[in-house]
Amino acid sequence: MTKIALFASGSGSNVQAIAEAVAAGTVPAEIALLVCDKPDAYVLERAKALDIPAFSFQPKQYESKAAFESEIVDRLQEAGVEFIFLAGYMRLIGPVLLNAYRNRIVNIHPSLLPAFPGKDAIGQAFDAGVKISGVTVHFVDEGMDTGPIIDQECVRIDSGMTRNDVQKAIQRIEHNLYPNVITKLLNGFREEQTR
View 1: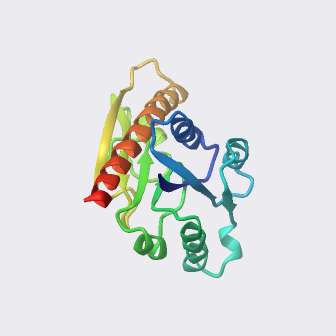
View 2: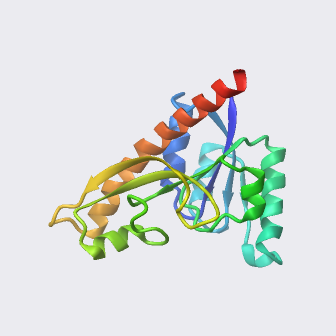
View 3: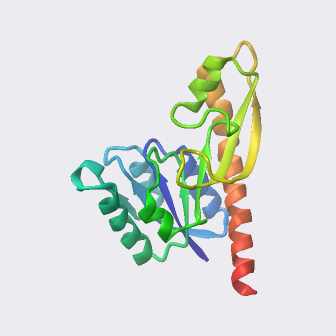
């Protein structure tokens, strides 16, 4: 079973969706660690309820990004983690983590990249008045939401929808798309390992 880590900063609805897919046997993985950069985030309550080991930290307590990323890498390696899936982790990944897990860090973003990268993509799309937005799953590189795209799915924004309606529609897609993409990636990874 491939060991994965989930990174999150907020409520963790994608963490919940992935954990449920793992429990149901549809995602062929073991969640070996949850990493959270906000010690009061609700995702930590979810992790506790789901019996997922968690590491939470406060970036300000470290002298640099390299320092906290080094500790994260140590914990990931101790747990035997092979893939990282960002699930609402609101920090750019730095060189320490990127080098340790090159091409094995994946992010989900609530827009059809390259449109609306960065923070509050749903708000950006809503304010721009676009008729179609969506969800992108992509590999992480040095940039902000610039890595190679793995999969995308559209969400239609109708004229009567509020920002909250758009967010709910996007989350429904995220909670289905992300576990499906993770399954495909891990199955492909396992096939490579057995060649």
